[in-house]
Amino acid sequence: MSLVELVLAQAARTPDATALIAGDGARLSYGELRRRVLAVRGGLRAAGLRPGDGVLFSVRPSLDSLVLAVAVVAAGGHVIFADPGAGPEMFSARMRLARPRWSAAESLLYAASRLGPVRAYARRRGLLLPNLSRLDVQRHLHTGRWLPGVPRGSLSLDALLRQAPAEADSPSGPPGHAAAGSAASLGRLPPHAAAPGQADVPVDPQAAAAVIFTSGTTAHPRAVVHTQASLTAALELLRARVPLGPGDVVHTDQLMLGLPTLISGACWSLPPLGAPPAAFLAQLHERGATHTYAVPVQLAEVLDAGPLPDSLRFVLLGSAPAPTPLLRRAVAAAPGAEVLSIYAMTEILPVAIATAAEKIAHTASGASGDLVGAPLPGVAARLAGDGELLLAGPNRCAGYLGDPPPDWLPTGDLARLDDQGRIVLAGRKKDMLIRGSFNLYPGLYEPAVCALPAVAEAAFVGLPDPAHGDERVVLAVVADAPDAAAALPARLRRELPDVIDHAALPDEIVVLPALPRAGRARKLDRPALRRLIEQAR
Image (cartoon, rainbow, N blue to C red; front, side, top):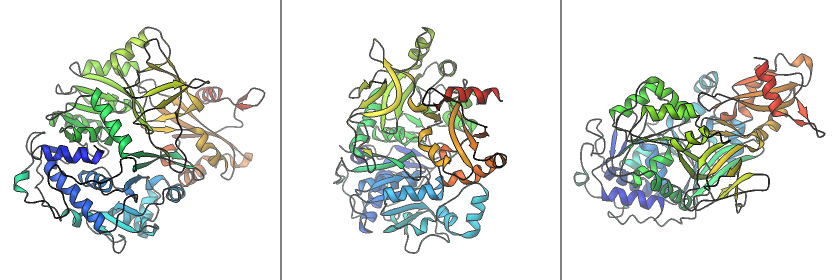
């Protein structure tokens, strides 16, 4: 069964159970989730969405955004994730590559990207938005109430949702049980919806389902293409290692953990957007969370805010290495839970899962490297001649947009396999940096920075934070003239958002007289550069 079929089939089996709890406490039952997905799917098809159409998706996580994303894939389209806040030049380069047929965005974002006063306000807040209404697309769709700036003829998600009987959302009642109303009280399905258990989703599982821009420059944007088949394989791998079922409450904003939740009949609890650690922790307690996911930095902050609830059975970490001190804190804070570290990347997820006990024991043994665990069933791993880890498997993406898929996916990680067949990371090839859940490849951005006026040389380096495992990104530059050096950091702060990915913007910019180099080829010596920056602090 395809991803969409699995979600709809589970919704048909448990229509009265709560599928989703929003950050504000609003609830959606599985029955209503199914009806809304089918209603929106029918409306999209009636409005002209055809199999293979790409939908630029600029909607923040919410109940409506999840319904819309699943409905797009159910209708045969694919969702394009490209941050409009990455800067106008970067965004335009990505659109030239992705060529979406539709644009779906919040009304507020349409207004902010089109109306002069709102655009000026956003710019003062450091947000440079493209004019979404001028995109060369076949159709626009907006979420939320109509606002000035929404393109003429834009399709309203609310109008599509009204085609299905609405179930009252209620913040009361325990997780895992229906919100006010039940499937039996919701009336018949809309004419374009199939009967329960007969979802009628004639979608090619090998067709694109999601296109995710992860990095790149204006000259060479980069997007990962996943199919329904690769995403379904990924979800099944995660479910096989992390049990999920009715009665479980999974507190996360991560789609790749939320979707397995829905397929399993559990309750997906969404934290509020930008929730501070104390609020995240409070909802873990209030909603009786059994599973949660965090990047190491976030978990450290949550642990600082107070004790974890006794209801937790799984604490999942990912997106960055988890330092041993943090793992020990997590195990102590959740003695009844299994603390797991997930090794994955946008291109293939998950790859391997290691327990906190395994990782702590590995470090305590004096062994080098970061133990990430044995490859999960179906995932193949081998080492290239230079030690780079190569991966393959049914959960691997179909490749990068515009490029043929490789037989083996190069990870950029240097690794070894221990005597138990487990992957141990030894370092990052080409000095990839990790910032939260974003992988930053310096070689992709440095040429673009060097092309800017007054910049002679540029290099990104990361300074690790041993407490959290995250990295502080520092951009070191050399001015092309001595009199340009003093003004260069401020100038780059203004110009970089238009040139490189927003998530790659440096935390700090330093101007040096020269970058350290080594060897006969005079290649950049990144370790020496890190030492130089640290000594200057």
